[in-house]
Structures are given as C-alpha cells and as structure tokens.
Length: 285
Image (cartoon, rainbow, N blue to C red; front, side, top):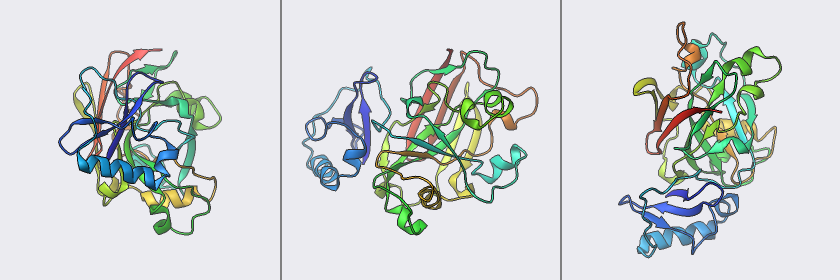
C-alpha cells in the first residue's frame, strides 16, 4: 500500500494512493497514519480490505498539499557515511560501525514544502535518502533477519544539512542537521510488502534540473535490516519512528571548489524507485 497524509500542515488527514493513481480518503477507517496505526495489524487489514473492495471515497488531489506520510513521529535516527561512494567523496574512512545521530522530529515537513536556508548559512547541502519507518517496537533485536519484521515501510527522505554548522562549528553534527524544514519526507509510506529488496533501489536528486546524485542502495555499507538491528542495541525504536539510512555520492560537499551549495531560489527534486518524488523550492529563513 501507498499511505499518505494530505491537507494543511498540522491538520493532515489519512489517505491511500490506489493502484490506478486515485487518491482515496481513509478518514472513516483511521484517524491518522501514525505509529499506533502502523503497529495495529487489524487496522492495516481493514485498510487493505477496503482498498481491495473499491469502497474508499476518492479525494480531489487538485491543489491538495501532501504532508509527511507519518504523523506524530517520535524520533528521526540518521545514519551518516553509509554509502561507499559518499564516504570516498568526502575523504572519510569507511566506518567500522554505523555512524548514528538524531534529527528532531520537528524538522520533518512534507515532500513539496518549502525548505528554508538558515540565517548566516553558506554551506546548505542536499542528501537524498531511503527512510525506514518502524512498525513494531524494537529493542535489543537479535539479528538483521528479526529486524526486517519490525519495518512498517519505506519513504523518500531529504536529509538537508548545513556543512559549516555540522563540521566547522565544534561539537557534534546536530547543529548542521536540525535546522527547521531540514527533513522533507514522503510523499508516501510504501508498506514493506511492496519493497521486496530495499538494497536494490535507485536514488536520484536534481538541483535546478541538473542531476547531482544517481546512486543505489546496493552501495550501502550497512544494509537496511542491519541498521535497524544495530540501532536497537542503543535505543528503543517505537512504531512511527524514522531511520534515514544515508546518502549516495554526489553531495555539494564532495564536489570541487567552488562547491555548489544551495541558495534561496534553488529547486531540488529527488526520487527513489517505487517510493515517489519530492520537489522543494528554497527560501531564506
């Protein structure tokens, strides 16, 4: 299934994109697409049954905003330097273990919402990423195979980063990762049963129409299920939590001088095979 949330920010309602590309209203079945619903097998079965029976009312998508596909996200866990190509382009050694950092849940916005370039920013960068959405509480998982059963689905994420704040201002990476609007998510949450191999997905990103990133999750250093297993050793993952699993080569930081960092007026578009497409116009904060 392709689950999504539509409507004004803070007042989104649950919806489904059916096989014909028609937007369907789920409000009569569930109050939202959130961790509670993702952990409720009966609720998901009701949605599947209603979609199969063709009884869900259609929504007019004209002018309708698409919000993040998951509501009330508890936390966003991010994995840094998780592609061989990206580690190489930044001059970093291949990590022996996953590099883990957090983004605040309030950085998450819709897939086509405006991204704000922070004040005094000179190095705002792009990163297309595969996002994993958790469907079952995960703590101290025993294996990557066990971890797979705790994944509700997948989505496109844009891990926007400010490299000066991240690397040159001291401390951890958090300052360069938690600026407002720095995590567009969606358009859809595609349930795990529709993604047979998360290690065989193409990821692409364009800036002002120019292709910048063109990679595959096959280049990940730590595969998706291994990441979920690893993170569960250090924190409890709850239904509705999101894990951004890293970005392929092609970010601005990895390019020759003068590095083409983002500015107000730029347009970024990104997509992952089968998971949909995003488009953001950048403005000054």
